[in-house]
Length: 339
Image (tube, rainbow, N blue to C red; front, side, top):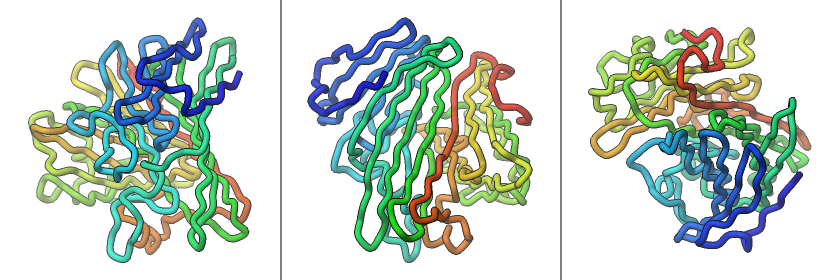
């Protein structure tokens, strides 16, 4: 079943839209006017913005938010990336991504984070005897002399509310090659933890752009210990190269002090990098321990010079796939080979 969404379906008072044995879906509108969809599934609750960047604004498990703290409380239209920086999952790209560097003119993390999507819908169905629900939409982006594409994210929520699977489909609508970049800004809360990865943390695979300890860049293995008592201020940024042809997927597990775990996994055919981003002081805390990406966050010009900007043939399509979740026990995290 496909339920198409329209702006007229959203009001300040929450309204139930769909219900099944595994899911309930309601709509509401923030005071800022931004439309939102609330999905309740098992132990999880998701707040999705169908038109504002198709962001997943929040994700709660057992009534507790699992996103970073100290950032923007409520989404708004008409603001830039940092002014609206509060979502759990933010799609970044597609014509550029990262912090603009020398020679760059693109906005912070590209056009997608604050773009207004053209259409949105919810799909409910069955798979292997279980109910499924997906949150989808599409934007037709066209700037003459720059690019013309269609981007269609799809977020699938598991019945227990503990797993999110993402597919981002990109279509080149031009008769010329499309250059593109993408990053999934997945913003978990900061906590003292051990970071496990399927990619070896050595200088061949890991480049630390911003370090918080002198000499840290020479010892990437030090990234694997996240100290609750340390101020990661303003931020720690590292790039992990997952282009190794023998690796079809890359994954990480954040093993927390209480034995629970967050995890992220990505297919590396298109998403052949990921970014580690950590910040922590008295005002804020975030642990983006694996942000699936096509390149580093140095900006368009720098990443293009490094050969990291992807190309899509005229009329071509690409699908970027990744997933993330929460587990009560680190042993149950579905990432194999992390150490």
